[in-house]
Image 1 (cartoon, rainbow, N blue to C red):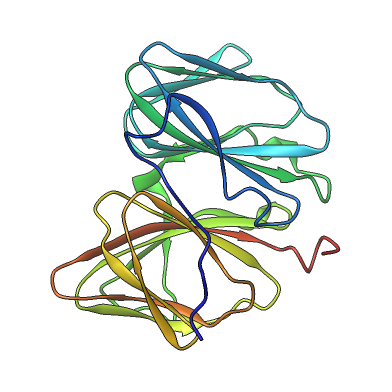
Image 2 (cartoon, helix red, strand yellow):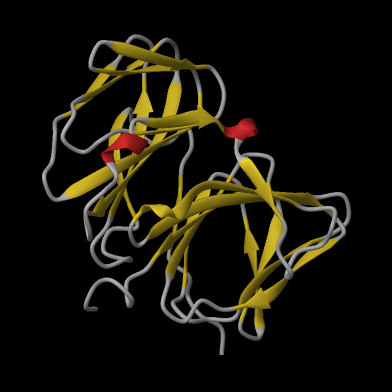
Length: 230
């Protein structure tokens, strides 16, 4: 029997400001989509029990922490020490994803701020993916306890073979060039661009890219069974 997938699509119809994404889908975490006008500012005050991971989806922004500026005009990631204030200033229309995740264990504060362009992220190989796919590791498990983040990029015809993560909840976000199928258990689901989707916990999941279509998406893994009581 087909599942009803939880989705959240961004686009021009959304108002400017902050929107919560897939509220309550992953225990212990919150996702926010920031749709920012030119010269808009967002300030994140320090937290003692959570950490925020920022991903610049599109636009041109400057991250500021402790009087240091990190400016990007393409996809990029920024994670600051949770005890430090962060300012985000948009130079033009921008879209920023914020993932707020609980601090499960003590962080190595020497690793923060962690920031880099998306294209410079470490690439890796995965047995469930073909040689034509590009996989990037944006945040590995050693940086933030219980959380990891990466991406997959490929074009048709291609398949990411079905696999499962029994202890990890997962959310995907599809970039604007994407048009592919999600394979979940024994069903196929159309997956549109600019869309967040919750991959059901412990499901067998993969993707299929047909014809000359493209797949380009972020994956976010949350270790909800290994680190948090569900």
